[in-house]
Image (cartoon, rainbow, N blue to C red; front, side, top):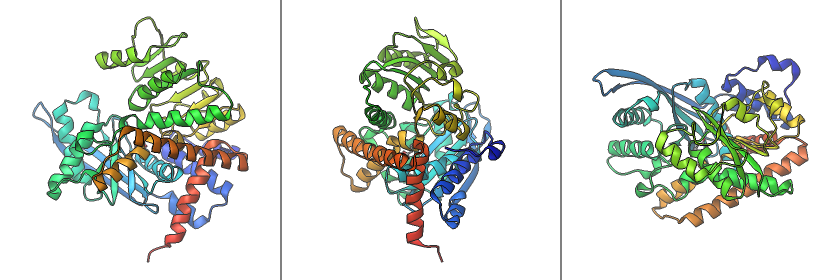
Length: 424
Ligand code: GLU
């Protein structure tokens, strides 16, 4: 994306400002109607909740959480819930806006939303997490529902947390409502393939990108930052496609082996120790060093703002596939585009998760379930189609893939707003 020099100083590390900046840049590029731009700048609805939770030691702790619905012109709001000590309202607003674009890029009939609770789940017992989740679910139940806003997992939340949300919502209704959340365990209405979907979708996009560059995945060097749901499964799938995964990391640090890591052994190691750090025979590296390693494909799969103007010129990867949301700042985008690095933007590269969430929701509403092959085939079809549409726009406008994905997404949302008109 092109960042005007004089505007550069205005851009900070606040990701809500980053999100607004990305929208402004694209609005200019595509000549977006000023009124539509004005509408899209503000989230439709913000709910902030503070609620008490009984802790195991007998004390009561008050937690703060959010649910933000950015836009619902194309359908019910959709997006994950994040549990993290650094959650802020601005972050949740940005993530909600990105969900609006993501759902539009893959053309699934949803708007965008996101939730977050300021907490450190790594320091909480299972009982505390359950009580926090149930109370938060209760607090936000006034705005969620299968026709209104459908949460899902995000950073440090998982199928168990979704099961508690589904149960809490259902208890209040008096009957089971599986369609209120996605990313549930399969036995209570979850979908086959949902757990792997973000990573699988990302690998489908990488495959399309390398096909376009006329190279093969066999033997190419990949580096993955973040070893959670998206990163660990992406590393595994890339290895299965023949890539050499030379480095991975998590919040405790990174490991590096030029000959390629054995990802299935590493998955077991992480299960046992809770981290990849210290894995035998590999070299220790920091998260920062990992991003600058010589490699072909870099997959940021952790948090926002990790590729910035500080390190963009040191990045040696040819392709960056954003499994995380918001890993690259607009200034870094511009530098990488100049350096001919192809960025597969988050709203395209990690849209596999919400796409299979959509399949899960359809299956729940119909009480009719698909097998994994059906899920993966449909996912591939949607991801491939989205990639081709974005690539076509990037060729037409001679722009990077993020700008192209935004032009596609914002155009689709603008069309929906125009068709619906302004109430009253
Ligand atoms: N949290 C995921 C994302 O950022 C999934 C959202 C969903 O499935 O609704 O895309």
